Image (cartoon, rainbow over all chains, first blue to last red; front, side):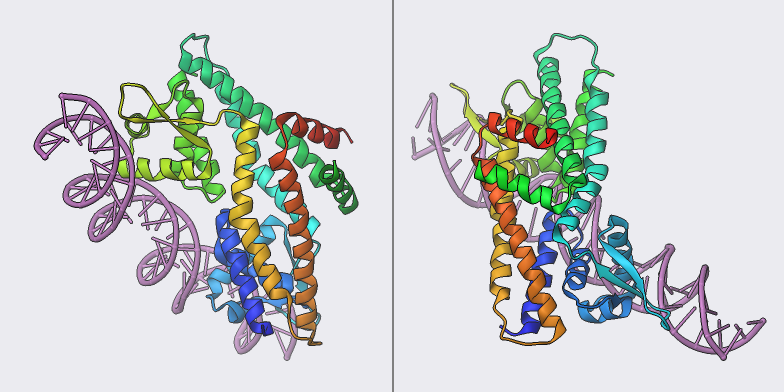
Length: 168
Length: 168
DNA sequence: TTTAACTTTCAAACATTTCTGAAAGTATAA
DNA sequence: TTATACTTTCAGAAATGTTTGAAAGTTAAA
């Protein structure tokens, strides 16, 4: 396989993966592009490589910055903004975990808590509901604890912990 | 809060959560409905509770069965099919992990492997590409190992492992 | 068989999300 | 200031994903 083909294949695959995880295709593709680029790229570069509009490129670069997984960079004597990806995969994973926790785990925990306090009622529906939401709440807590630890860990800690679990 | 309101709130929240994870809203809502139902429900019941069409209900029930997170049940003397959810949250999580591994991790590993074998080439682009795909491949392996262990574990093992990590 | 209860399919309608590109906005150099 | 290089915004267009409902298919009791 030639390089351009390989590169394209990876970018496409990353796009599909993103889609399956509720991330827009272009956003994932820009991320892939920056991840494999040896040097920071400008919006112009991204537009050319992915054949997308300026608006689309700008929006999704913004979103990636917002997720904290790409960074801005300036070159001296050049007014353009350049962007580069976090290249440490574990750092990347931690950052994604941090964002999804904030965006999704926290809101669902909030709902589970709100929904918990029902007036006493002895119908099977209410009993089952209370039981299930309690179980979900416990699960959310466990997930939260795990993510908390994961996010604050360094690469070595993760490696060792996972190794320990795998070898268990 | 009254029960119907609480119930509705949970179902809506579950729908939004699903959406953020690339799962269609109705599918997540049917899942929520079955999760909190004390008894198995028929397609008819689901249609009424969620105000959706027969086709929609059928399609998404099918998808949930396909994911292995809800089950069919028959009542004697009744021709209808009834559906009930897996109620053990950890078993649910394991099943979701199993499916996503199959549907997403395996395909991306396949691509990473295909893309790995590039003719020798000393441009910085190719070097960076090879380095990055190698790192991604290692990460995928670690994830795979973790999921493997997670999937085959029992509830106690998970609990203890996570506890161990959290307390570390 | 025939009939009735139930399930599945799928083309078209609808809804949502994403993308485009031109116009407006901003910042820097001259 | 003015000109230029660059970034952002956003209304409408396009693409994609979801839902409907009626018709076709299936199954089992009579």
